[in-house]
Length: 382
Image (tube, rainbow, N blue to C red):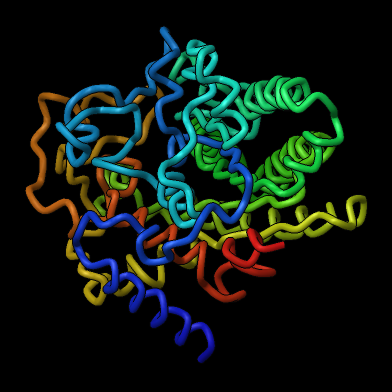
């Protein structure tokens, strides 16, 4: 009953958004709740990092990406407009999402000012493991490298504030947002299937390695001052259009089972971090249940009518690495749906701006059934 009530709350909030382009910040009308927001992860949070990677094949810098931005400008976001990272930053009271680290690195005149408000390190195609994304996409910024970039930002903040203690206090109060893991699971599933591995044997070993690596990443951030960490778990990636194209229009139960295992493993791993860091505050968003219960299983109340196909391309691809040329990818040659707000998926992997807005609201406001031990809004207030 409690979970059903929370679903209804999210649906109500979604209807409050409507199908307009009003900034979510207008609904809250707050000053920033934290000094800065530092964002890590993959394409779900990338706001243009991969635009600066010359050899990357994971790109969103062409038409029709960004079709709902002013002048339909492609910004490198894997969306028709804003993504979940943008929406969360706005909900936290910022006028806009922080800029990509690689952009700031190339624009030294604004570097100092901007890094004090936040930085986005996320890179499309990357994963928790160091080499995830390298084979299919050639060049991505791994989580390992993203954290190295943050360390350089931390050093610069210490330098600008003239003391490490000042930097640490600011970082302690800042928000860290992370969304990663889907690409690791995709690559693992494909490789295990192609080699005929016994999933009962290899999945626990894979997940243990994944969580150990994730734990190391989080410890690294904590050692550099992170105390408020909002983590987004893996959604039902077995239902994205590119996977449905392989399974006759159906979701892959195998991939979804790994995604669910990821969430339970992640929650257990993060809770153990507090043993070594008693002042750590964290939130883990169950993107799997949020997506299933409020979008896929019952889409009509929030205005969704297509939760299977991709708005840009309106076709699916065969799940192979590298991607098969079968089907139509989102590109200047693709067809695009007219009403983006009734689609769950923008392209073969990623949600529309509207779906991202629903997800961000859930992460920010939902109860412990979906975000625990508390939601991102509460996390920001500590």
